[in-house]
Image 1 (cartoon, rainbow, N blue to C red):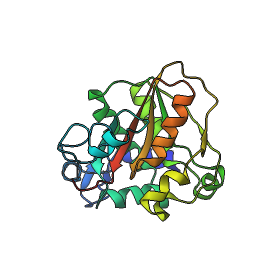
Image 2 (cartoon, rainbow, N blue to C red; image 1 turned 180 degrees about the horizontal axis):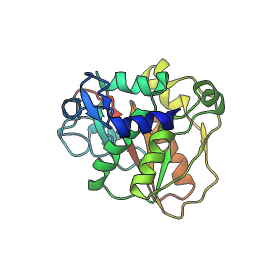
Image 3 (cartoon, rainbow, N blue to C red; image 1 turned 90 degrees about the vertical axis):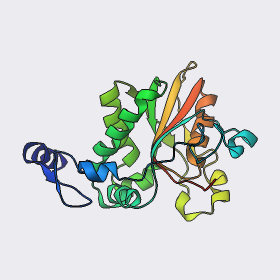
Length: 227
């Protein structure tokens, strides 16, 4: 069915998901794309939170296991609605839109050796039917030529969004596993949204344990804190 939808969009054009205007083969028209809420220019190069200095106070006080964050949009309306449409309504066409954004933005960043989407526990994957990070990652991998690899989530943890920020790090501790050895490679951990960064940080910790030389974060949207 998704292949049929993609064929129809490419052949006959489509309407913008936000405003309903003609958008050709794309899911969003040019005007809506231009007006999506982007992150401020002044932000921490490690965690991508707004910061007047290159590295924010939080990252200086407690450096995360990932070295930098490629993030494009601020996780607010209508970005949150688009993400929810992808994740909970199965609008997989949006995975292509988000992947294209990431690929374009990545041109100014160090090129990783691998892209690794944040995994879902098998129980959650059966419930949802797909992993949105993998759907975005497959397209980003194809467009960049960077190999996509996968890890496993070995504990079925409560959703991070259901927990207070301070409890999220503990929630994902030792929740992931990967048997690959990385021999100092650079791995980009890819997800749709970064909130506290706890999930990506735990994956980065695990990857360094498997020999990764550098771990960066690739996320479409970032939930930001005020400076």
